[in-house]
Amino acid sequence: MDSGLENVVAAETALSDVIGDIGELIIKGWYVEKLAASMAFEDVAHLLWQSAFDDLPVTQELGKRFGEARVRAFQTLPSTDDVRSVIQYLRLGWAGQQDDESLDTAIELAAGGLVYAAAGIRRFNGLSPIAPDSTLSSSADFLRMITGKAPEADKARALDAYLVTICDHGLNASTFAARVVSSTRAGLTSAVLGGLSALKGPLHGGAPGPVLDMFDEIGEPERAEAWIDAALARGDRLMGFGHRVYRARDPRADALKSAASRLPGTTGRIAFAEHIEREVLGKLRVKYPNRPLETNVEFYTAVLLEALEIPREAFTSVFACGRVLGWIAHAREQISEGRIVRPKSIYRGPLPELVEA
Ligand code: ACO
Image 1 (cartoon, rainbow, N blue to C red):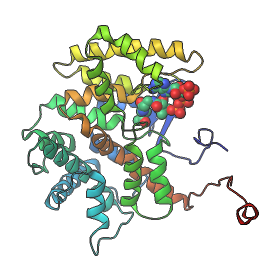
Image 2: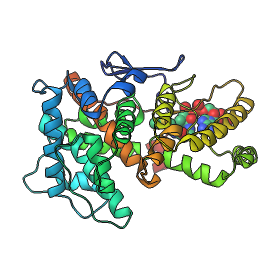
Image 3: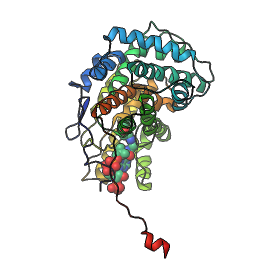
């Protein structure tokens, strides 16, 4: 029995490899740092979906279809802000709309996520959603749908670096959930909904918002040590640290820190984050001398998304906008396995003889 499944190998994948001992992440043959520095959302969608869809067009055409799909998603935007409800409503709630495993559905899900997340952010800020511009790149249009103006190139580049960095990560909890759902042949929309539901927990993709809460509570660098001591004494988990697989630093943390540092006005915030990071790592080493607990992706996600003026309440939705590419690629890979995922459990309940007695 292995309740966290850490020693269970449940899939073969050609998508990504998390090499925990040395802190490396390879996505389709690329080190994540290199992907983050050179690719955009459209490029990595093409990379991840290459072997998933026979009818995948070239990257430029895929980008064009993402733009058209954003426009369609906006035309049918429901009033609810919850991304899961929106996707469910669009794909599962209408008579005649069936879920399927096609490239069209994959494009709709990947493009739709950005539209729904941007509309949710607008409404959260008390503003009306802004229609997409299908001629822009996915990242530039996402930022434009939030602010109303075309973003500076460095901001769109920073968002691309983020979405690319988090697009896939082995058999993490949400990807596993998406693979389980797709193994039942429920369809890509259902698989993505499964992934979204698993992602939002604070132990997975729900961590970066609370990282900023921690920064706020600490307030001043001098207060960091006392705050961390108190949190650890209470038995709290410090958000943005620790990982199931990494025993070394999560390479995505530095990819995102470097993307954030290229944005104007971030020097002070990064210095503050680095101070807290040093303090936390020092304390964790003392508390868990035999268990390496290092910085994970969520710590500098918080710094980067804050610099892009995305509200912390929306961080997990933005995470989903990138990870959806991986969920879809994994869902298709699982479908090609042709077997339902169905592990065993050990019954520890009462025996019928005892219940009847
Ligand atoms: N702060 C304080 N203590 C921690 C932390 C942390 N961030 N992470 C682990 N620990 C402690 C555990 O409580 C455990 O202590 P115990 O033996 O006294 O019970 C010990 O370290 C060992 O824990 P692990 O076995 O390494 O933890 P596990 O693999 O089950 O969990 C997880 C990994 C969920 C990421 C954990 O480190 C955590 O909760 N981190 C904080 C939340 C977070 O940042 N999540 C984002 C992860 S990245 C992602 O999913 C995209």
